[in-house]
Length: 139
Image (cartoon, rainbow, N blue to C red; front, top):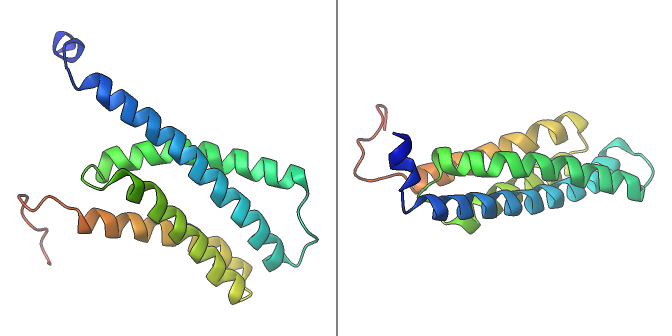
């Protein structure tokens, strides 16, 4: 098995794609961290964020994005265009946070971010599923 993976011509391409996904995920996560900093301060009624708040949240969410985007993409979104696999969950997470802010609910703010991102991933996985595979029961 090891000999096969050593001579796999697509291995180098998969590594490049995974690296690109990690970089894009880090950038997208940092953007989400910045947006959530602003929106979280509004929901909490706290004073404006400091540069340290922005830097910390961008770093934390960037790290989460760098780890999750390649994992989720390779696990369930192989057929989805790469830009959609990165940007649509990002946009959904920010939209979920925006809804929580508009409703003035800290709980909805915290809950809707991961729920919206997960719903976007599920929608993409469904929209780009392999038509050759049998449909799951219940469809």
